[in-house]
Image 1 (cartoon, rainbow, N blue to C red):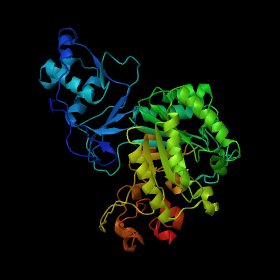
Image 2 (cartoon, rainbow, N blue to C red; image 1 turned 90 degrees about the vertical axis):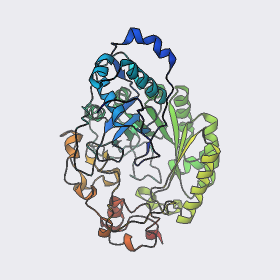
Image 3 (cartoon, rainbow, N blue to C red; image 1 turned 45 degrees about the horizontal axis):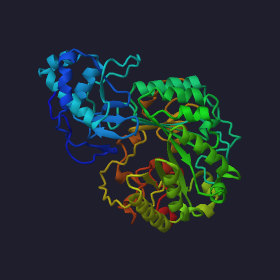
Image 4 (spheres, rainbow, N blue to C red; image 1 turned 60 degrees about the vertical axis):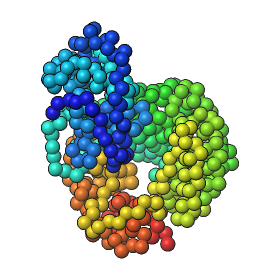
Length: 482
């Protein structure tokens, strides 16, 4: 396979939140002045960028931006160039290997950098970090990826609060054994080496973990986009500085714009300390987003929360509709109905339109009562989600599961990071039923449900197991709340 100057995939959006860029045909004329002096230079892949080859995906060739977490579909020729650069070949060697002039290599690099800033830079990396070898000749017949693309780490289940809605019922008295920072660092180094794109670090409250500074220091050095979830109350200047790396985003919980509404869920004084923590984060230039749990007592404030984010300089808001699990199940006064969920979702869409280009506003409904997307599944359709296919979650004691909903279920635990690598755990047969072995016809109720074309939760079999005790049964969804 030879490089060619077109160099860009065509088409629209693809599965797995992948974006295809437009084609850039303008060659920077200033590049010509460098031609005579850098023909034999070594180039390197910028720290911001990581790539993967995954034959299991419709878009096999992926490029990830560690600063934003966004992923792009690229073509084989671009990936071949990235591999050769990462292998340390000079421009001259790349030109000879592919049978094209050096000038064309430079023009391709220029166009790629026009699309993805800093993708390919002059000079060797000099940091001594290596990554797993990408082999374009590799092909396999399996449903899951070669290695997870995203990982959630619950580093501790201890928390300085005991929120009424907490899905994992955390508080300051939790006794789960937390593993040493050295184990987490070794795990994160493995994830980075194997080209994981996204890591989510959460708790409990992760800032209660003894050794969090070491973990954050390591994350700053990786090519992974790291989303750190915190209630913001324990942030000091040292933590804020550690979180200021461009590949780290801090998602800070806020459930109201006043002490009355925010403290309702979290306890007296929470809002005061949250604002102190937010001030430190923003002063240190941290990429801050607000994470808002929308429930029956605060949904009237979502417009005010959006205005607060815009006023203070937050970059994003995630409105997450209440999941009736964990401690929230014991507080029915917080619950919102399916109709309320639809109305709230419409208001969130209006906020997206209002703040477009200013704040990135996201909307997540874990219970997915009624989806706007209509899908008519055939009986032969495969039922799956990202868990065990492209995603894993690791519990505070290091156990590895397909997702965080499975924490504590021995039948879904594939190993522990203190005893084996994530790669070894990924090869488990325990997750086979989640990897293309479950079909729509196997589900006991969903195929005959009146909501089946608009239910967004049918694919989540772990939630079905939690809700009904049956892997093939009904998840917590619209029909289960009638």
